[in-house]
Image (cartoon, rainbow, N blue to C red):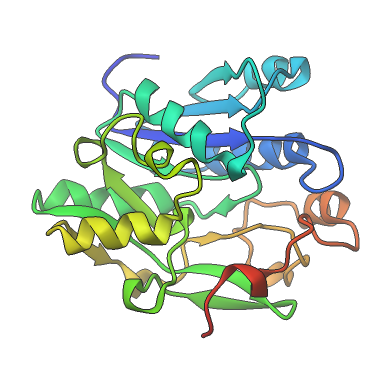
Length: 242
């Protein structure tokens, strides 16, 4: 893999077998990346701790660079994201968690926004989340406190390496980070005319088959998701009111 990569994808991975089943979801994310229209990317897979299976699996993943932490940091992957920024060589950064699903045009749409206008620092998009076990479309909205890492791609040169989350003790919410950047004069643009470009927590409630991209085998979602959440938290706990 060459050194001239347009996009660096950073994926923190943790797998305790109960909440996330992270390694199974990671295989599905690999399928999402293999089907991207935009293929000029590197994929930084960063395991929070040590895991031989993830290390071996990653050897077969597209454009993957694998890293492990000597100890488990937790904090929902925030320290891991900082580490990923320090290792990334891409001009643009995007954070895609292990159990997210992205559509074929996710990388192309978001990167084209940044390609076409140097004044734009953050490109944003609507995504699917669940609400009361129903899929809904959520637009990024700083003024309403509604931003998730999956909503945006950002120019690497506006992120201070190893300081984005760590300066907040690993607990910095992406909403506050984006709000701070926009308040500081960074321009963001939402590509809402394309509709949702991704699914947050792709199989949490086993969304209706119709909202998944065509390359996804729905039986895989059913097998991984089972009949319970892929996470012990509820979406209602993580989002401000709609």
